[in-house]
Length: 311
Image 1 (tube, rainbow, N blue to C red):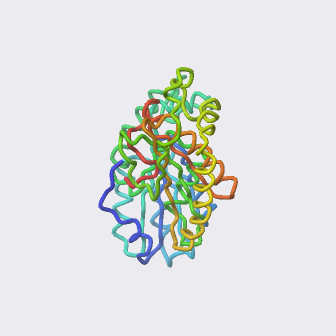
Image 2: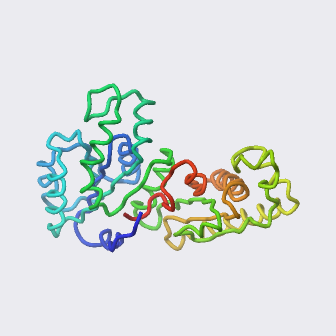
Image 3: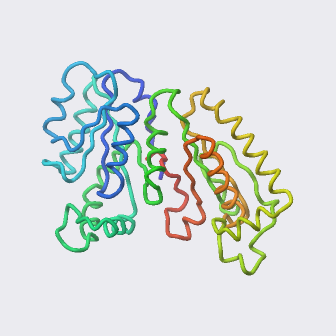
């Protein structure tokens, strides 16, 4: 994803009623996002007809921000109508609108529909593939207008809630969302990391024929990496440093902290350490998501895309 010349911070502090329009293809996690926003204190309304939205915003601003769920099941939905609604709200000085677009790879959407055995809202056929393709094409102009775009292809519901908290949490008292990343130094450091640790000093499973094809999530690889005599002290000191720093970042008003672990190929050592660190921080009560960039590349994920980046 690319960054646009949009400062989300400005829209959050300008006067007027804050309104987040939540949309995206069916199956991308809109319901999860809506519930997460409700948990954050937003006034949530789902699938309200477009014609009623301007009337809803008449009068003085509410005491809390508002989130409106919009998808192709809206009674009067069309891409043109939604673009016109966004333009109309943008012109109103008493309203501060933002568009949150939940994106997802087509093959992942098809898989999700297959698992739930639900029919796609745009097709009555047994297979949802045509409906997924049609809906993604329909939403192209809306996706282009999004201030925040979150790719949910590789996110669990828990991870998506963490991203929603990162972007739409209200004020410095909101809990810190921590993301733990593994990566290959050969492919460069991921954009947006706040701190990183170099794991290349640990012994490398790549040189063990029985471990080479596995990755750092495999118990055998984890055990091999942890068997390095320097591992335990390294991990303990890194964990204790992070547990000391995280509360300080909360006090500074940060809503998200990205921590990276790198190795040569991004397959074994960095993944093993990132997996264990994510579990350790979660066990300490922190809200944690994880991202293995090189493993996602091999699995066909979007290269170099950090979940929750600004669109």
